[in-house]
Structure formats: C-alpha cells, structure tokens
Length: 422
Image 1 (cartoon, helix red, strand yellow):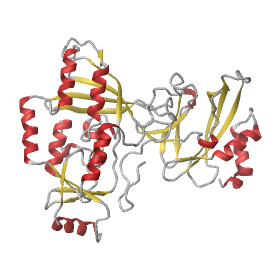
Image 2 (image 1 turned 60 degrees about the vertical axis):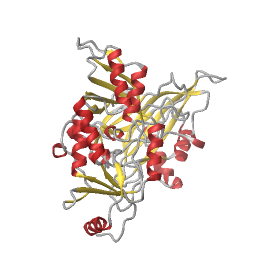
Image 3 (image 1 turned 30 degrees about the vertical axis):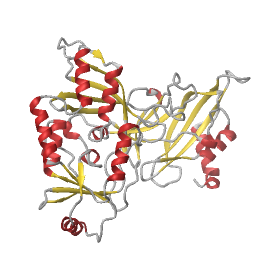
Image 4 (image 1 turned 45 degrees about the vertical axis):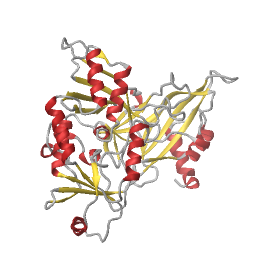
C-alpha cells in the first residue's frame, strides 16, 4: 500500500503488492506523464478546469466525436472490425484494440476508475478516483483560501501539496465519465469541504497512479465493451512473471466524448486451488475468503503458489512468497501442490496467523521425479498484512521432514518461536 502523509487518514481499498493480484507502481507512457506533472507542478496545487477546456469538452459532446485521438482511433477500429454491427454476435477485440484500451485506461483521467471494485458507477470510491486530481489542470491557491483551509483543519501550515477540486469540476467530470452526478455516488469524498468556495481539498505528497494492461476483451455491438485488465506491475517482471495476478473485468460503453465506465469487478475465482480456498473469519479483516492460486507454469515453470485474502469482492492483501536468500525454489524445482492451510493465533495477539504446507518437485537433475515439503509460517498484523517468517519456516521444515503436519509446525513454533522472535 502506498505511504501517505501521517496527518492524513488512510482511505480506500488495500492493494495487493507482492506475487499477487495487484500492484502499485508507475510505469508506461502515462506513468511518465504523471511523473512529469508532479515535477512541474507547484507544491500547492489547485485543480481547475478552464473555460476554454469546458467549452471544448461541451463542443465535443455536442458534435458526437471522440475527445482525443486515442478515443477516435478506438471508435474507428471497432467499426472496421465489425464492432458497429448489432446482430448480437460477440467478437474478440483485436490486438490493436487491446493496446488502444490499455492506452485509454492508463490516461491520468481514467486510471482511477480501476482502483476500486464496483457493480455500478454509484459504487466507485471517489477518494481513489480523485486522489491525484484525475488529470485536471492546476494553478495556485491564493493565501486567503489557504488560510480558510488551515482554519478548518486546525493546522498551522501545509505539510504537503494541496489538491483542490470544485463541486462543478467534480460533477462535470462524473457526468462525462459515468453518466451520473456526485449526489448519486455512494462513497462521497472524505476531503475537507469549504462551502464558501464550493471546493474540496486533499493534502498529500504522493500519487496513487497505477498502470494497467488490457489482455483480452469482447463486444457484441461496438458500443459496449467487456475488458480483461491486469495491473501492469509484475505482469512481465522476471521475478514475478507467472505468479497469479487477479484480473479485473471492466465494462465500458461508448459515449459522445469517449467511453463511460460501467463496472469494475475482480475475477477472484480464476485460477483458484479450490480445495485449499476457504471462507473463514480472520482478524483484523472479519469474514473473508482465503484463496490459494495456481501459478502459470507455462509462462514460468518455476513460479510459486499465491495466497490472497479476498474481502467484499476485492483483494485485501496478498501474502509474501519465499524470495532472496530464503528462496526455496532453484532452477531445478517446481511447485507441486498445497497440502494444508491452517488459521491460528500462535503469538496470542488476537490477529490471525497462517500455517501452510507446500509440496515441491525436482524437474531436472539427479533428483528429478522426487520432491520435498516446505513449511510456511505467517504472522498476521493489526494493519492487515502478513510477515513470512522465513528462518523458522526453513528450520521447521528441516526438523520435521516430509511427513510434517500443521500440528507439528505449531508445536515447533511453541517450542522454538522465542528463538526467532515470534
């Protein structure tokens, strides 16, 4: 999860970072633009839409044309490939169209629509959508307005940059991108609101920018599109390639100025190891699904299982895998199966800990056809993340051997945990 200013309360959904469903990172052309904007903008920002930009946007809508070149190309490509037909025959999107949609969702004004999970536009988390200003223009805030903001917050000064959006900006943007107004949204901004300026303020010094890749998609009528999208970070990385990434199913529909976002769901059942996926009560999350995911060994024969905690249809966190000096997988070894998963509280702090037993096999060399069993010991934390206790996990495996059980591992932790600080 990205780090925010300590004065600001953390908001929005928790994103999976390591070997898992999603990742936070800045990459691609859109990410470079985001970085350039951050470097050029003053430390105190005012996000505003100029009269010329508003007029241009309204003009584009009235003319029924795409707002920018990328959107126009997508519309043209869909028509050329039969997307304009209304015979109800579904067709897959071409590679060119997939790239165009990737470019579209990665624009600064659009990526925020993929940072929350929703069945209808009214369920979009606006704190995530507008976190970095949704690509709107910036200019300085005058001293009088800053003083009013500081009076409301009780602070003596600004500690980071200040994002400012007016009610008109927000409403205009939402109407264009979703077809509904701010008043219809179920998750309104938690920012500071000053009625005398009809403006919302958010003080922060980072970005929530996330790049995505559209890897598949379809349409029946050239107007409504279903996209399969994954976070870009880790998808092709040498260390993470092949580890399961939970895809999003994003639906958009063509509009006068481009595309409107209709829904964004996580396809949480894709790739699950069913007999090692459990509906369970885990603290501090409450009722969740603890899901084990198969690695994509066709892309990387030596990638590993992924464990994720799923809550309310989205990934709350992903458990870390073995890596670095504790990496149990060498070039001759491959994931076999998850033998067991257990939920406990071995340190008595009221937060759920996880014990897992995983089987691996040697796929080449003199030991090919044989394998070994690995113990994994995870400590849960109040903040909703897990620490993989690498050293005691390795020690437990060496001490207990291939016939180990969860009870054996728990007994090992009870007897030796203090030696490892758990």
